[in-house]
Image 1 (tube, one colour):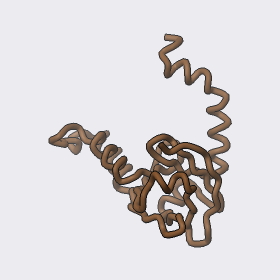
Image 2 (tube, helix red, strand yellow; image 1 turned 180 degrees about the vertical axis):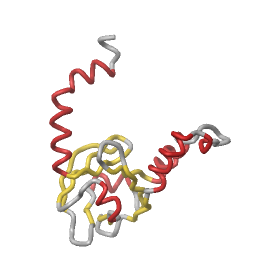
Image 3 (cartoon, one colour; image 1 turned 90 degrees about the vertical axis):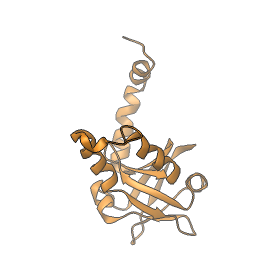
Length: 147
């Protein structure tokens, strides 16, 4: 399971060192794609296959018949990149993904069970502060309380 929060720097070649705990789970090749909420998602190939399957309508996969699904699939698949983790645990973040969320010199790597999220460290701090204030209400809402 991918868990934890790590702040790492981006080197001059757009490489970020993945935490050792994440490397064990991720393997040698990963998929980086635009995420939701101003971050990037990193999936293992196995998890990416699950995501792909869930984004198709059925075994026949006629998802291309629905406009919303076509548009979301373009967003998630069209901007995805397969990336290798190098021998010392670094990944290269493609410029188009780096620019999408305004990555500069420091990133937050967040383990979220089945994926890693990459955030601009300042945006992550702001998001985290908002969510921490809402944690109890979110827990009640997700737990079915307060209906």
